[in-house]
Length: 178
Ligand SMILES: CC(C)(COP(=O)(O)OP(=O)(O)OC[C@H]1O[C@@H](n2cnc3c(N)ncnc32)[C@H](O)[C@@H]1OP(=O)(O)O)[C@@H](O)C(=O)NCCC(=O)NCCS
Picture 1 (cartoon, rainbow, N blue to C red):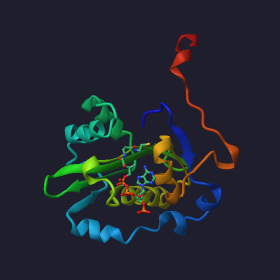
Picture 2: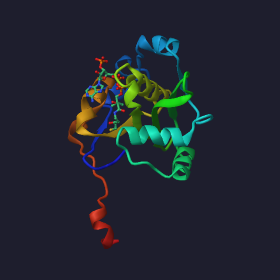
Picture 3: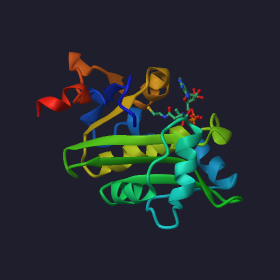
Picture 4: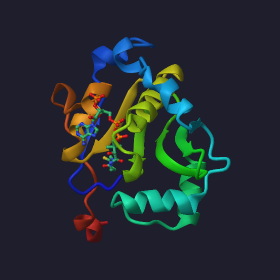
């Protein structure tokens, strides 16, 4: 989510052309094992406690944000995916996307509670996010990744600088010029 030191990456064209590319869309067998272990996947923000979500953001080092701003951001988000741990009723994994609804989407705020990392939740959420976007016909899917998580996104079908295309973001250093 934070743009500092993030590398824009996207799904390459050869994997975008197929509405249901196996390389991107196939889901792991662990999905069933995750649900049987008490993890529930949600596709709406109903019952999502924003203070609890903020705590997950803070736990991974994202800045804690104004819950009201999160609420507004979520109103402009589609799709959203989050995972609830049944024992605590708290969110433990989350991802969301914004876009124009037909061509382009950017995935934001991919996060897994540190206590639940390494058991496939991040991969499961990302696979479902990409599947949902492709099913909507949205094939230009991008995200910003910290260098330390490039290896997480690559097997999910994302590449940095596809065909040499570089991402650019507005720098606040220039804010006085406008
Ligand atoms: C990055 C993150 C979402 C991964 O979630 P996770 O639930 O721990 O990942 P999973 O257990 O689903 O791992 C899936 C695969 O990715 C690999 N992986 C996970 N994190 C990785 C990393 N940082 N670098 C390389 N590979 C990684 C796992 O080894 C696993 O590989 P396998 O399928 O071969 O077994 C999670 O570590 C996180 O929330 N990090 C802090 C927030 C963050 O950096 N978010 C990304 C913003 S750019």
